Length: 73
Image: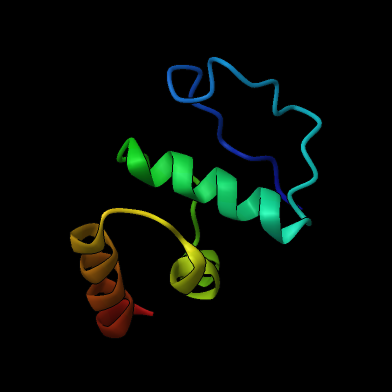
């Protein structure tokens, strides 16, 4: 797995250097947190498409991302 892009302003309260991103629950938490702060850096279209239905983000953002994926993924 490629190294995750970590924005210290978003993950200031967690040490995620050793997080198991193969665990779907951790991946969902990570994506929720990044997207809530508007950080798309390092998120692939494949990851987004796989996990979008399980994310608990603003419904408008979820719709926007779903429309993006429909057109570009």
